[in-house]
Image (cartoon, rainbow over all chains, first blue to last red; front, top):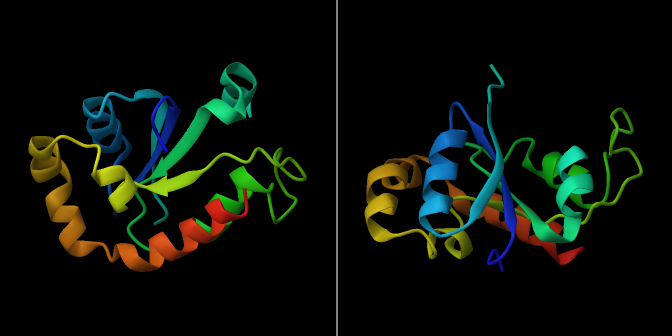
Length: 41
Length: 95
């Protein structure tokens, strides 16, 4: 499903931030090619 | 758009970390079927990139247990992932 995919990680300040998503997915062996953290406040 | 050109949309997946379901549907539609508001560069561009939430079981299952416990456990207690999963699963089914 995600195996072999390059990941775009879009986090949210009031949810899970981008760097955390990236760290977790890299730990899962995936390649994160972009990460950002949105703020909708 | 730049990443889709660089890597090919079929090789990409988006993983979100939103705290609420608001806006997730629009985000998912934008990178699957094209910008529904026709306001941005993805208007009419169907990239068909699958979108997941980091707390969905499909994603969490691949994360090592230690990282899951350290980084995601607290968020998983606060964020109601079911509505997010339903919206994103529906978007993925359209691909």
